[in-house]
Length: 208
Length: 144
Image 1 (cartoon, helix red, strand yellow):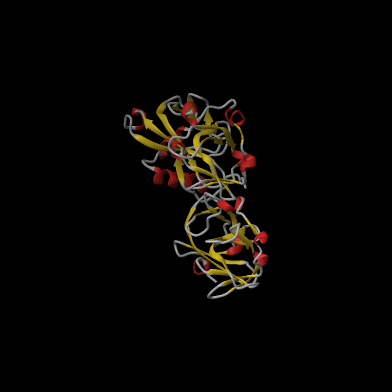
Image 2 (cartoon, chains in turn purple, green):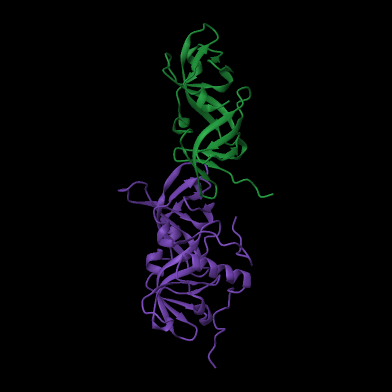
């Protein structure tokens, strides 16, 4: 099911991670086991690590179970599909060493490899379909991009350099920021057609 | 034969011509893509589910079952959650495909032939993956 994002791969629906909250988690047998509470990110690999679950319905609270990404059959536009309830694990299995997306990236500064802060992360953008890849960020820009606190979208390489409070991007990526998700999808497509954005992309803009 | 036209049909016993109930719905085995039982309502005997093997014929005016014995009827168990007509349809990729508008099936074999969606799409019955209390899930046809 899981494939590396290849060159020229079509771009599927892009969703802010916060937009996944509330999406039903459904077995292939057609039973809903809950809804997505938080998206947990695997910052090292630029992927979704898994989801914590809440019960379905307006007033239902968090569940003790979580869905590790390995147990996800597909991240769809209308539901997160899992093969069966057997893939559910204890909540700690997904959240260990990670934070929910709210804590991990939201508010992190976006720094170019020339040491210029170009924005602050508002949300990460993930791609629906089978991979769960983090393909970009929605950020609030700084003056360095021409507009202070404008909402812009920045495509990321397949292995973004990311810690809890800093996301580092190659400076040339900041020349291709988009104003909306449609523009981001086009930027992601351009990256794939160009075949760049792989590991080690950070550092190419070295100042001499 | 269309499921929507079968629902509401009287169910008659071939043993004594007594009316045992009315067709309320189907119980299907999604993996086999076939009907395993008929769900009845207005029954005068104990249970409300009758096994497909006991269905003698699905005719235009009545469904004839080969048994009148109440012992052959079993109460709906786990299959009781199965709702088909009007149920939301999801692909295995988690995309909505509308709702399940109707099902055509072969009354002789019980095989599900086609799922009709509320959007006018037709999905081969063999692509059925699951029928749960939340959704009917269908496989995505392999690319040629």
